[in-house]
Length: 242
Ligand code: UDP
Image (cartoon, rainbow, N blue to C red; front, side, top):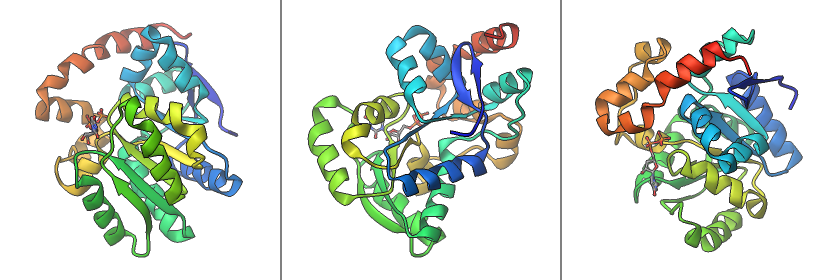
């Protein structure tokens, strides 16, 4: 990866914008080697502090993008000027666009039954000619790995979107990456739900203001449990430079 790497609370993140991430994906497909893109948000950084297995997954990923206002702020504080977050719910569109332009195929794995199919329809509407290698609701449970990996592998996609939610999707990709042999594997969280129209994304003005988290909290109040690490993240990431 040509991008420089900075650290937020010792967790590595690559200094790359959306265009750079798409270029990385294109190169990965040309090279034909399996790669994991992980979109690192503040919750991930906080989890990596507690869970060394999760930390090693982020460290081993071939690309780690800055996902969310908290990470962007921490990046700026460290002299890195990523202007916008590079998250799964935008990358899924840009990667599908790349796929349609170049004739690459995509596989959609995850979300509730039927949602991946609906998502594929929407992506094909946006990018006519987009090749869908397959869709499957699937399961992040390790017991399901063997047969699931077999099916995804057989479809030979260039890009695999995994929507099992965080962090299950990245555990799943990390343990199956080599057997899959797919050049671009990326966890995209709730993106299928947004694209299929099952959930609504924050309005653009809120996204631009870095307030996606507030929107999500208002729609899904049970998220406070996951989000309660965020104030601590803000304090630590702005006061400690390691
Ligand atoms: N999901 C899934 N299998 C599971 C648990 C979750 O496919 O066992 C899906 C769920 O249907 C949803 C996505 O994972 O589409 C999680 O969305 P969320 O918005 O919670 O994403 P996160 O914020 O965790 O990245």
